[in-house]
Every structure is written in structure tokens, then in C-alpha cells.
Image 1 (cartoon, helix red, strand yellow):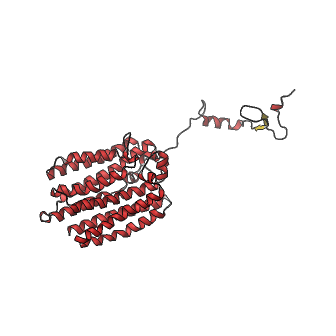
Image 2 (cartoon, rainbow, N blue to C red; image 1 turned 180 degrees about the vertical axis):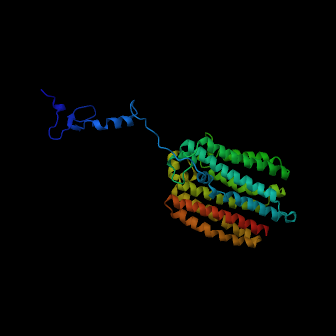
Image 3 (cartoon, rainbow, N blue to C red; image 1 turned 60 degrees about the horizontal axis):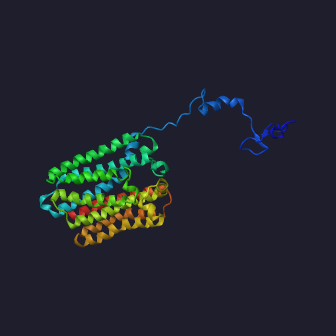
Length: 349
């Protein structure tokens, strides 16, 4: 007697059975001999072609320039301008210390670009950028080898270190070399190492301290040997604007960072609170302009930077897509540059 579990349907031409994992009566489509060779080639079995990974486009010069994230460079220029303006205000008889000021600018810009590449490398090898919605990264996209990206980051750190040694010697304060070393170490471990503090909601602290207070006060100190109240206040203001840039960047990536286990301040605060915090970080520096305006009336001209800051606030409070937050980031960086250069001119002249 024929087995009812393996009857051949004369009408459909399909086979039914009680094989493992299938209910009785489930149709089983017989293999097509024409696809045998094709399937063997995809299976990786002997006799077929091995599967090949999709080719990744090698990084171009444009990709490397994009990896430097030049939109954040204004955050390095602004504090140096403020420190130089405060130095000239304090001791205008001595004139400008152009060489020291330019060396400070080289330090700040090199560290900014270096930390951007280091961040690209560290997030890439961790897989944090696997869920990225912003511009693609060199390491995460596979366009560049991780060691190459790390080498470029270290090259910029080295440039900053050399400039730091030079300015320390010229200013007569060689102990500043130790401060510079701390800055470089802090820049790397922002997202590098086993326990990067940028993954524990401390990124804003790093930005405020090093790209606000240290950059502004340090620039003034190497030129005149002291730090004035104006320099400290200016450092606080530009540091808050730098934090705002980081905040809007992390708001854009909050959902992806949470999936990757990266606990930024935006992740901890939540979406609405983060947007409000961004607005506060942008507006407080302009409130501080009222204090500067009492002694330095030209400071009121710096309110011109609100033309970039206010649209950034509106976009961040209402934005829903990554391109909107990227635009807000650019506008905030521009506002920081206008604020720093404008206030520096108001102090110096």
C-alpha cells in the first residue's frame, strides 16, 4: 500500500509529506535541475564560486576632508580670537604677539581636527557608526583602514604638540608643555580606550573645559602672562556655544547612539529636554553680552551673530530629520565664530 504521507498530486505535480518541520499536506517543490549549478556557486560548496563581499569604495581626498569635519573648526578659532583680544586689552602697549597667537591657533585647530579623526577611528572600530544617520565616516564605512585613520589623527596631535612646545618656550613657561600633553590625552580618550568618557555623558564637559576655558585663557596667558576676568567670562561663553554644537550633533544621533550603547547627554536627557538644553546653551552667551556691553559698548554689535543662532534654535526645536540637525550644527558653528571674533574685536578696539 502506498504511503499516504508521500502521495504525489496528479493535479498540481507537487509532493506532500510529513518531513521534519512540515505539516502533513504541505507542498514540497522539487529542486530544479537548471538551478543546480547556480545554487552550488552561491552555497560555497566545492565546485562552486565562493561568495564575494561587496566592494567598498576607497576613500578619496574629498572623503578625508569630510573626515576632518571642517564645520567644527570655528570652535577652535573663536577661543583663540577671544584670548588674543583679551590679551591686547590687558596690555595694548606691548602690541600684538602675532607669533604666539598663530601658534595657539595651530594648536587649537590641530587638536580639533585630530579629535575628529580619533573619534572616527574609535567609533568605527567599536561599531558605533553602524547605525549612523549623519555623514558617513571613514572607518565605519570601510572607505579607509582603521590604522590609517588613527595615524592621521596622531599626525594632527603631533602638529599640535610641536606648536605647543614652541609657544611654551617663546612665552617662557615650559611647564605649559604638561598642560598640552593633558589636552592631547583628553582628546584621544574622548571616544578612545576601553572606557571613553564621551560614552558616559561627559563630552560636553570636555568641550567646555578645553575648547572654552583652556583655549581662551591659555591663549591670553602665553601672550601676557596672566588671565583677566574678561578672558574667563569669554571662555565660559564660547565654551557653552561649543557644547551647543556637540549637543545638536548628539540629538541627531541619539536613537542610534542608544542602540550602540553610547550614553551621551542627549541620550540621558531625552529628546525634548535635549532640545531645550541646546537653546539654553546658545542663548546664555548672548545674555552675557549684556555684561560685556556695560564696559565695552561695541560688544552689542556681537548680537549680529543671533542671525545664525536663532534659526539654529528654531530648527533644533522643531527638526525631525538628520539634514535639519546638520544645518543647525553648521549655523551654531557659524554663530560661535561670529561671537568669538566679534567680541574679541570689541575688547581689543
